[in-house]
Length: 411
Image 1 (cartoon, rainbow, N blue to C red):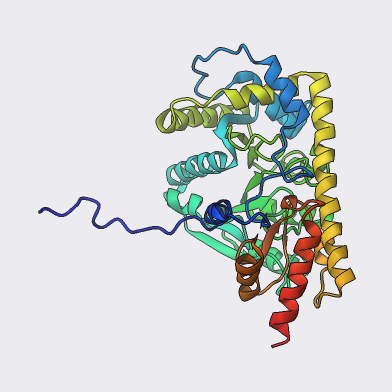
Image 2: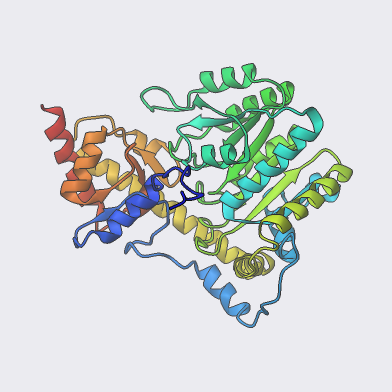
């Protein structure tokens, strides 16, 4: 019997976060909590269809099913670009933005990486290093390595995860060769929850500009961090408008509009001239044509309907406040529960970190114990999705963490 053409193909272990959700779903226990996957849930632990999205779906119910243009729904791209950079921004007025609809944030990152790889080959015939934070979103490394980039990590948080390691970040930026690519989390760093302050972003931006580095902003949580989209977009707009730095932005509406399954995002490049933007956009069109021919329509129509309608946009702004405030409330509820129980450890970071995620600082054996004995599912790094907490389970989670910590740290 002849050997298979696939005999040299290695087995790749399943993605740990999706595998965690699979284990959670297979667990028959009625008392279980999923703090792994980063999806927003309401106070009853159920998926939340945003009121703005529900109304938008009613508006587009008779939408046709024809192909979209290669670059995506025109109204979506236009409105999303204005949302991202500001309606009256010079970069839009001057025609310096190239954009395409993308398959959510992951697709946007992959598309941005593909065009940057091609640009580097054409200009210098050398491939720059992509720098990502440690810790970082688990998919960052393999997205860029799959394209062909070398990927290097730098320590983003302090050793005890008590804050941003600004010294290491500054040193890495300063020592990186010109044209190196840095992947920044625009807000709500995943998974650490530590974001630079406005002043720190300005210092980061100054080095990026002086060194000739290229920033990619992974913008998955704009609006959900503070409750205000414009506030959360500060770093992007500062780099583009104030510093004039060419940048890529990979925008996802999975979290901010609850469109997880619709896979709707925007890949946008702020360039130095309209001529360059035109060339970049033409290359984006070619890449999209090769990979998916043209993008899916439904999610794009939903987002466009929200952004085009003044009332729906105002409703969405309130929906963002609702989500961000509930996440903050759950942070405080977990923190106060652990403090009230006198749980050994410093838990203040839970309230100091921002966004959907938090790293608790538990040991691996403690994480596994919580999973096996109490059916509380969190990542091995003790990263938890705060949105998985609600009034009905947060006390249970705090009590189980308390028992586990006491048991393992008294040995």
